[in-house]
Amino acid sequence: MNRNTTPNTAPITAAIGLLACPVCGLSLGHQNRTLRCPSGHSYDVARQGYVNLLRGAAPANADTAEMVAARARFLNTGGYLPIRDAVVEACHATTRVAEVGAGTGYYLAAVVTEQHPQAHLALDVSAAAARRSSRMGLASAVADTWAGLPILGGRLDCIMCIFAPRNPAEFARVLTPGGRVVVVTPRPAHLAELRARLHLLDVPLDKLARLDASFADVGLVAAERTAIDFDLEISPPTAADLVAMGPNAFHGEHAVLEESVQVQVSVTLSSYQRV
Ligand SMILES: C[S@@+](CC[C@H](N)C(=O)[O-])C[C@H]1O[C@@H](n2cnc3c(N)ncnc32)[C@H](O)[C@@H]1O
Ligand SMILES: [Zn+2]
Image (cartoon, rainbow, N blue to C red; front, side, top):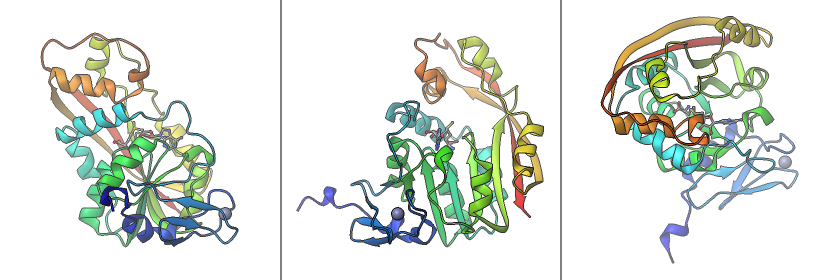
């Protein structure tokens, strides 16, 4: 038997108590390599260990394998370590945690290692991202945040959403009372030098007041806000990865950096608590 064709189902089955069928919302059970709900909807675990819980085809703007690889290379430089540390701290003492738009699983893996939650789940609309986070040993599923989370109501005490789309009503639904959402968003100065030099798209900026209001509407109250600002030396190959890992990857040729530059990382970490 070719061992590579046997999926490692251990991580996703460890998260089974969190999962809901994306079609009918009932709980999922597992049998061998298949997750199944009582209504008979079933989902096969892929060879790489993740499960696809999309109801339809992935949207055309899902991150590609090349984008995910560029993101992994960039994060491996340690450039965003201060952000990772702040996220781990904000997720202290979590017992059941999910990251939505988890990408490579970089932040969730750190939370799992440092906070030892009983259960965790990485969700992303991109199958390439789910493959990558699954390779890191994380329970991973492909799911579209806008379409509703394939998570049972009231199951999580922490949701992480880092540079990724948010669905406040869904976040509120799947959190226990007292549970929290940890959100990281860029500020206007974030990588501004690099964007100007390379003529990149501007990051769509979230006004914090609007972010707070969208969470307050569903009973998620702003609890903590931290500005994370630091300088980062970016080499030309790292700059190329920063371009390739984001929306600019979809927008053709860009100027190339000739030499290293100092850029400013400028993001906000916000926590919201379900009252
Ligand atoms: C900027 S990346 C951030 C990834 C990761 N959180 C990180 O910071 O390394 C945004 C991620 O959100 C995912 N994403 C975009 N739209 C999504 C959606 N509707 N549902 C779930 N994930 C989505 C992308 O595939 C991508 O992996
Ligand atoms: Zn079902």
